[in-house]
Image (cartoon, rainbow, N blue to C red; front, side, top):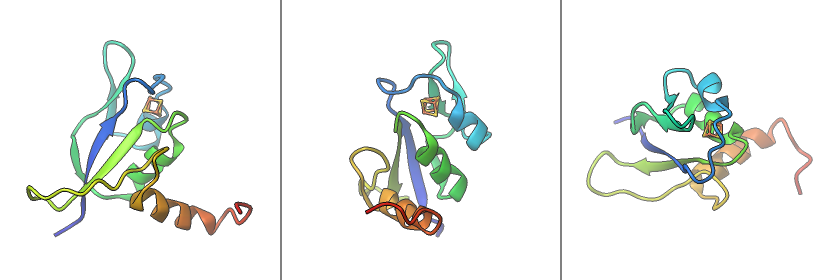
Length: 100
Ligand code: SF4
């Protein structure tokens, strides 16, 4: 079974930059308040979604890994860090070796 992520957008952080719409077309949309929300809350894990979370200037996109069952673990991307963030940082570190 493919890994799945539950996408959430922290509306307190979102500034409506639409960067996520540009980075991951089809995954996000802006609502009437010009704030982002996921078009589907559960998606197959993908580099596109990961990139959208990584590039969000407000770290407003939260990815929760789910096994597709009632059991869910909170691997989050964002300021709080987590496994998904760590994976991304490792992948990104291949290009950016400047971090300490
Ligand atoms: S990139 Fe981040 S701040 Fe910009 S619209 Fe998407 S969730 Fe909001």
